[in-house]
Image (tube, rainbow, N blue to C red; front, side):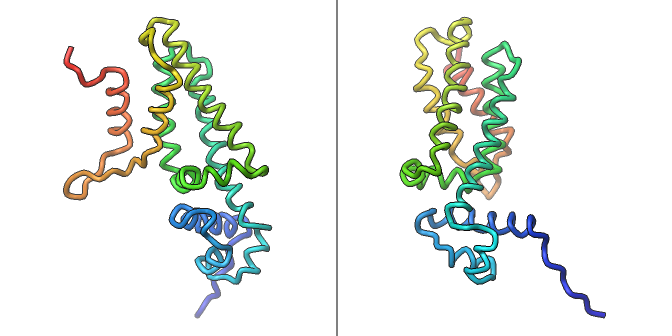
Length: 201
């Protein structure tokens, strides 16, 4: 007896379309990707895509908002009620690595098409979110300086930029013979470099 495969629920179908679009945006760039290409990847007509989204920008909006909501929520939780700046930074680094691995496409979109997104009124929240992310890091670095945990001459803004760029590098680096480092190993390596350095004491 043959059975007919049931159509996915609207919410599930929508999520599937977002994932397909995110992969295309990451691969080709947001501006270079067309609605037709997203529809083709999903095996539907372009018109059918508009039953779920009113524009390509709406899809991009959902991808980026989901990413930033996750990151900001994690950072707020990481520093809440933590009196030790070093502990807070360790929690932020661990959360960042996990969150960025969940949102690789969104991260690539921001890196490749930031100039476009930041110039669009509907994406104005990106600048606001990025400022909060930056300030969260700087606050903890400055607290560490004041507490005597970190060097007094530490440039908090510069350190944040360096850490951000390191954390934004994809964490799927490959070792020799196809092996890869685990997320925990990468985090531990970064924290060791950050707090202990490479100079023998």
